[in-house]
Length: 250
Image 1 (cartoon, helix red, strand yellow):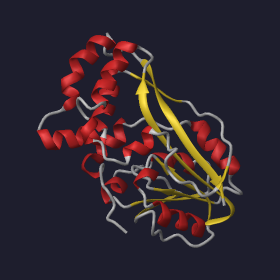
Image 2 (cartoon, rainbow, N blue to C red):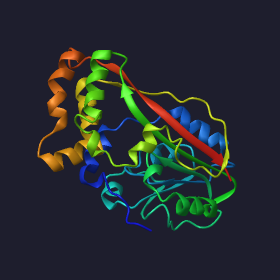
Image 3 (cartoon, one colour):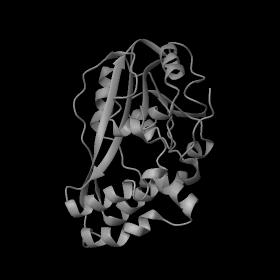
């Protein structure tokens, strides 16, 4: 198994503070699909954003990530146990979890090894779900064109890792060897001011790789245009993401 690809430990605190939150309705739906609410495993948990949401619905959550920095910055809850370990080799007992989730991380995994681990850890009729969010926009063409310019080949495009293609494809290119569960649509929306959007753009792994390679901030190259398009910086706008979910049962 190859060493895990760590794109976020170097800016774990920014990642925690700047990332959008997942729809609450998603976690209500997942809890309803699971055979019970005894134990959920959040694999590739990062800063624990999904783990905390699961902890409000499950008696116990085990949250794992190979990055010690991400785990160190994760939100603590009494019923969450964080473990630094790869998703492909977890320390969970066999047939112990009712739900396994992967939030914005499945594209980094060794699929075959991880899916074998999911089958080992899930109890009968347990549920596996993985999701990702892609391009964001406000519905204002002037703003969205600036974001797209930042995302594209002109700036951060060459600095996205190849696995990003799975997100751009809506996870349709990822193998999914489970009995699929039909899921409703879950809109992913945040109400942000300009500073919050800029922080999010700077939390992109491609932005951080660009900075490391060039010694300059690519967001700074579009910030003036973004400010002009946004208007009053304190103005709050809806920012929406394309949200993609895979869900299945063992």
